[in-house]
Length: 152
Picture 1 (tube, rainbow, N blue to C red):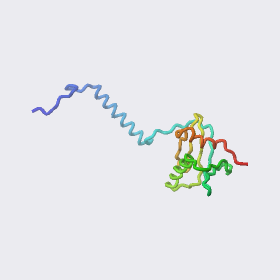
Picture 2: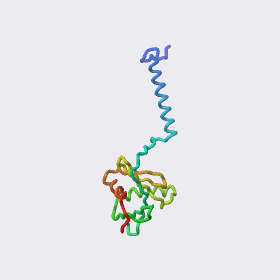
Picture 3: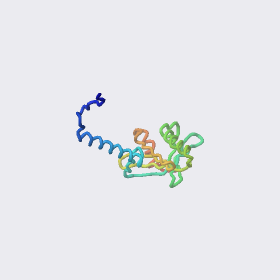
């Protein structure tokens, strides 16, 4: 009794099929190794920086958010009212700080890149928000802080 089923490729598998199979296994092993060594996401390229500024965002008793320049320790802006995107971004970053037991008073670093991107880096946790990905209107909320000066 014959229990062997005939192969659709014939009785002998051609060597290109074996080579393709081995190649796919090598590629799969290489990708797996890279993911274990470097993490799941590829490292983010570091684009040239055009400007950067370290800022602290301080909630006020009346609900406003005061923005302080860390270098001068002076208030450079104040946001009043709802400010949904600003509040939401800061809330998300501060939630991670609280979860990690980090100091809530460490500054944030706002960076403008040569290619026009703007990022907000939490210096406590290392989390980075690419603000341009939320649209030009939301990005503009933070980009205006590049030039903000202390009130006279």
